[in-house]
Length: 219
Image (cartoon, rainbow, N blue to C red):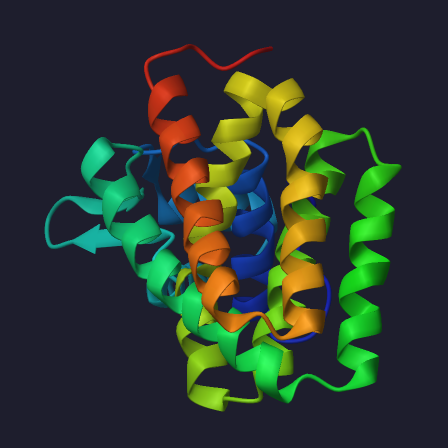
């Protein structure tokens, strides 16, 4: 890992460790040891401890007394819980956005979808995927709903990263079509149909992830 070098060291440590988790260098369930992390980042153990606390609030790591801190697991139970919450949140965010989104919000959704169409890199597509949903939540104009999304966003990022590793071609083929349909329904204000599509979008991702769970990640 690169040494921490900007703003608060705890926040920087959290950013670096999060990036390593998303990159797969700290696998789901693996231990995160303060001493080793501090040495790699060239910061104090206290800064690492505070950074891990940030990631724990995001739900990306878990700390257990006398057992240390670990990256969250990639189990059927973990996936079902996160995607059940996300399904309810995305449904509410999309239908609310359909009634509140400004022209600028709608144009932003279309812009992100347009970029997805021409993107082949899985990691970049995932970044656009999350950017799209972030824009939907902001368009909904509900701060507490946005906070709830932020509470699960890192976990969704981790799980979707694994989904790409075990089925990246299928993900890239379908993702832009699904987001294009969501953007259209939000623009047209078709809230009844939108509620169904938004929730199915999440559950189709959950099913794809569960299907690939037993498969080894592609190198």
